[in-house]
Image (cartoon, rainbow, N blue to C red; front, side, top):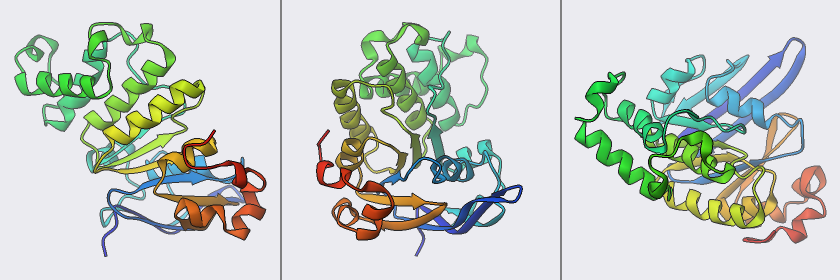
Amino acid sequence: MTYALELKDLRKNFGKTEIIRGANLAVNAGERVAIIGPNGAGKSTLFNLISGRFGPTSGEILLKGQRIDHKQPYEINRLGLSRSFQITNIFPKLSVFENIRCAVLWSLGYKYTFIKFLSGLKDANELAEKYMEMIRLDKKRDLLAMNLTYAEQRSLEIGITIAGGAEVILLDEPTAGMSKSETSRFINLIKEVTVGKTLLTVEHDMGVVFGLADKIAVVVYGEVIAFDTPEAVRSNPRVQEAYLGSHVADAQVGGH
């Protein structure tokens, strides 16, 4: 069986310190997976390995059956995997429309195109307009990205991520720094714009985790100790002992 994303006995050492210790994970196409675990568990390192920022010490990473370990981030992106970061990663001095269009250009095969020719690219412009509507920033089309609110900047980053045409999307703590109302709206936005796509997200807010994920992968000391539905993970004694503890009873779907 070919998975959207698969990790096989993945390991990463920094010097003599082993951070990722034989992680295994198989994600089906279209699944939404939340990766959780205590601080220092290796979640960010795992994301960095998958997206190509780090090369593994050993093991394999497969994207739609093709090995991507040791490929450069831009090569992985072109194969259909895109990542957003904890720190908002946008072009602050470009407009909302221009930010989205930059991502669209690559997905349509235009690569780098001189600005003076962009106005004539009807397909790119129409697609950029479509994505702006999806992320509900069409009314701020010409506003510089730096002048958006924090939540709007995060929405723009999601738009850039999906506009590149990626089938597998990695979101690193997408709701960090948001209020409860912003978080609720953002979860709904993520659900809408990732329909049909494979989603992996690192998230600390258990309300977000249980409200968004089809499955949860629990990482402890560099290993995936559980990978199952939210209900199964919530009742898993090993997970409760290793991480969730008393939070399990409080973390209901759509809860706080």
